[in-house]
Image 1 (cartoon, rainbow, N blue to C red):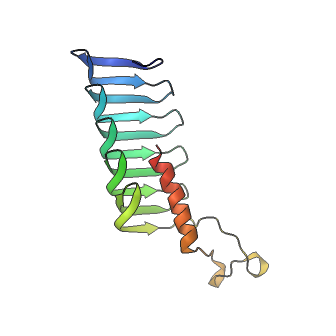
Image 2 (cartoon, rainbow, N blue to C red):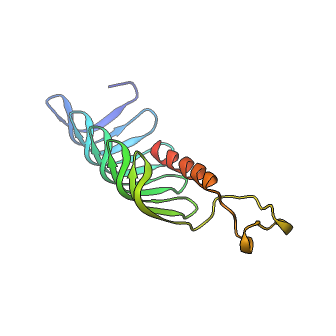
Image 3 (tube, rainbow, N blue to C red):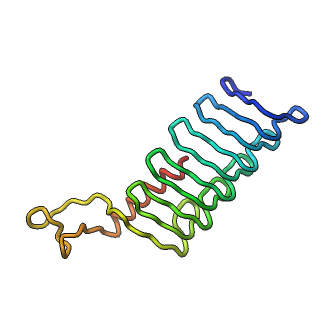
Length: 159
């Protein structure tokens, strides 16, 4: 095992196999099932940065149903395939916006719905500091939403 790596748990024929706890030098801690030294089955990872993933693993990657909670408040509950968010799921962003539907390669893809609970930050440029949109509501362009969505999605997939 690499320097600083600690494993406490079951072994079989010289291989990590069964349930155990793996602590990495980075401070990340995995508790759960192993097959041939790889995370496989149900488990929980507590990352050193405060993020937590609990759910299925296959061949050392997130796979199956899982729940990911980021330190910044982002929460994803749903399907993972080969380490990526894919299939049906629900993503709740720190500001309260919720997307529920299909995902592919860590991004919304297919059919879904989104509920905006808080608009992304905008600058008011209308008279008296109000937005030029009717009723003084914040204006959001498709381009700014795409950039906001992409940044939030990338944070989730980096974990």
